[in-house]
Length: 144
Image (cartoon, rainbow, N blue to C red; front, side, top):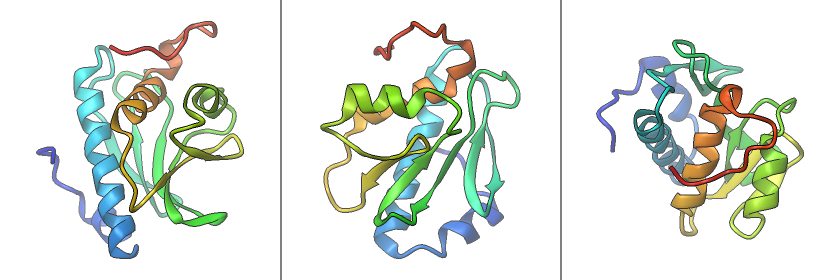
């Protein structure tokens, strides 16, 4: 667990999910903060709600695209990591991690709530989202 307290509005939003989904979303939330802290140039995150879901913005640095956490209507038993559908992120994630995650269109990476959390691939995906605006179009996902 990170030392980032959950803001009241975010805690209330997370509290609406069933326990397995809430716990996995909290794991992903913690990982977002860890990746942001370990990635040069990302800086502090803004944690807020967008469309009633927890959202993580790189407002201070402008380095990345917004990451939202929730559940997709097409996969209600999975947690969803949403990114802007106008980015190339999901296309890139699908090309690299089709065996680790399921996807919804160009907007969501889907994570099972009960299976193993593929931490390292998820770290790479989160880092790519948090640095999206700094990346060159030809750059590949790579470990730090």
